[in-house]
Image (tube, rainbow, N blue to C red):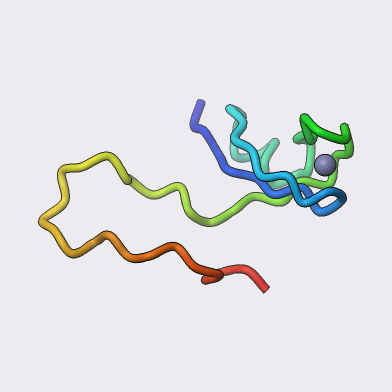
Length: 66
Ligand SMILES: [Zn+2]
């Protein structure tokens, strides 16, 4: 199973969870902090473990959210 990053819409906690893409999309992921099933999948789980030809390391700002 892939690991996805989530942000809880209730309390704002960011966490990672191993689950299927179906579960991730269906909102079945429970927030470890408040227990609400309001976590939204973040779009940032691309390969970040080396192997790149350089220049792929952008600063993580507020891109892609909001
Ligand atoms: Zn929460």
